[in-house]
Image (cartoon, rainbow, N blue to C red; front, side, top):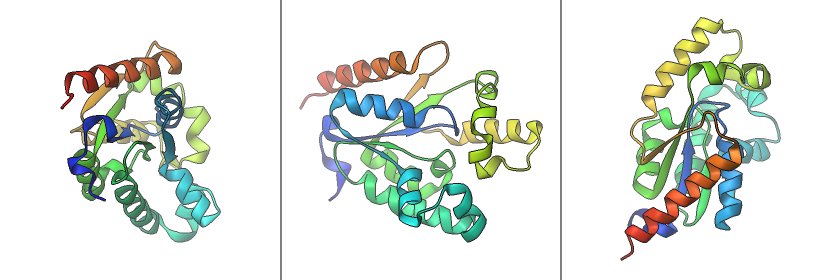
Length: 183
């Protein structure tokens, strides 16, 4: 199915942003509020390989993971009415970026370095891309990726709000957009 020509209201929604920014948590909340299915690409890959992403990286390599990520993401983005969370590095792949922008509504969850750094202790062990890196290297990665997340359809600043408030803001914004763009 080609998702490029469906109505705005039926398009799937893709959350992008740096690892640990809240894509999965916010995506699940938005999916519940919009009565849609939620798909976390990393979780789907973990189910298929029956191992965590960090183990896939260690045993099969990043290239194998990125290929599976690209194939799965481009396939799921062509489906209607999904809420999709993609990994922090997925949107760096040009094929994924093009498919997301053409077929879905892409929402960038933007977080500052200082706010994100407070989450580092919670996520560092589960993120293979961060393993063995100094805080300076991680900061450089953060800012390089932040630039690479452009273009997108909408950007949401996610600081100083609860996940619930952010999800409500996104849902209200989507509903307004759907109302304004009725055919």
